[in-house]
Amino acid sequence: MIVIRNKYLPIKGFDAINICGILLCRPHTRLTPRLINHERIHTAQMKEMAFIFFYIFYIAEWLYRLTRRGNAYFNISFEREAYRHEHDRKYLKRRKHYAWWKYRKRRWRF
Image 1 (cartoon, rainbow, N blue to C red):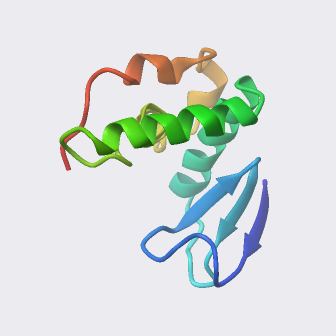
Image 2: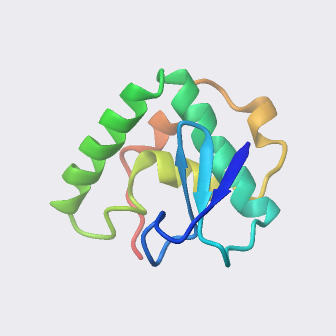
């Protein structure tokens, strides 16, 4: 995974953003195994959706979640899958394609 440290992206309040498999993070961000694994899960999601469809679906789901109760970001199915398995370094080896799909219905409350 390519890592680019910069002072502009991601916006304040976030540690990193994964754009097409390239990890952008702030200069002070500590790249923990948990964070790297979380972003690798997103890269797998992006690849199986040909990148562009991942972003279309991600933004559409975020906009939909804004109209619902709870935290829109944490209720996005892609984020739910990544947060649920970020501590499991072997998850990507056994992950099934479109595993995020099962996280789209239930919501988390933060």
